[in-house]
Length: 449
Ligand SMILES: [Zn+2]
Image 1 (cartoon, helix red, strand yellow):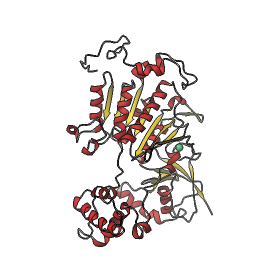
Image 2 (tube, helix red, strand yellow):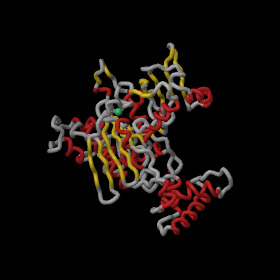
Image 3 (cartoon, helix red, strand yellow):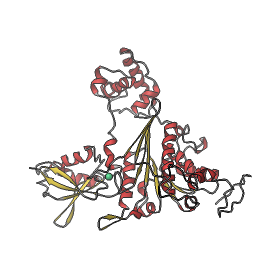
Image 4 (spheres, helix red, strand yellow):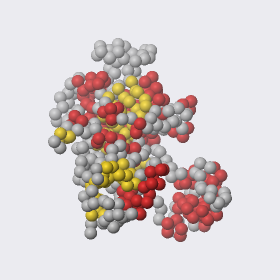
């Protein structure tokens, strides 16, 4: 470990070279004396702090808005064995809130720069970066951690991570081995709204159990856009959806490109005209670009509050000194400040964590396309590009697969065939692979008459 030569460093006697005498006093207050909120089974001692400082291995997913806050909070709380995964490079627009990055770092991997910053600023802390997608790391990698904390902005990535931790669970005669559980702390923010949750895979509600809480992209009703706009956004949507395809200002077949300033300028001018017609104010170039590119502005204070809640949960679980959040906290600072905590419940037939294949109810005369539509459109599944396989006469048969062009072409005719024509029987198992999970999901076909 590289030592800095800050004058306040003195050799501690706890075995750790970079600890000065009162370095962890703020943490010791929580761990070495009792208090009214302490876990009923917890005995104050010096052991918890030693575990946090020396043994506990934390994985932080994402080194963006939440990730920067999480790394800072965890490092200053005494966690020294931190790994961070992020696949992005630093963009200049990150610098207003992702405070581990400077202008000179633009273009470099977030994970690397964040790790360097923490390692040089917090003596004794060792952050190991991975400039990778979470999907590029395997079971052996994820299994080494005591706790995983997610600061992601993608639901697909969250679901994949959830699926990975579920796949690490060990069941013996149907009984879950508690030592195979890796707690997942998940934080999410969107503008002035956020949530923090604690997931004990296999025990408490998982990400897929509560998938209905993540509604698909909200769009404005077409009648509002077309005939009674009230907001500047309605005017921009009118131009984007109706006026652009009609007028084709940059030639036939030229799709609207949110990164092309001329395109945005055109949409902006037309939106101003439409807004003036309805006496609506507030259309700006920035808003136009935001609506066209579906940008939800990131709010630094929301990230800070959610990351603080998540880091607190990591601290509570790692030290076992306090009962963790049970299990879902929503946060809103749009107008004043509001938080609410509830216990999300496990879904009995959750396709990710229930251990039993979910039933798919279809008539034998339904087409495979209808099954595919159900997998993508059902609010409880929301798959992205499901690949469906089954076993017939002892052989694996791919019914439909989208991600490989040649197989897509070969299996596309199956979509218009009925389940009966495909030779599928009542009770047949269908295995579905999708980007939302590292494992295939099993379904049981139940014929309705
Ligand atoms: Zn579940």
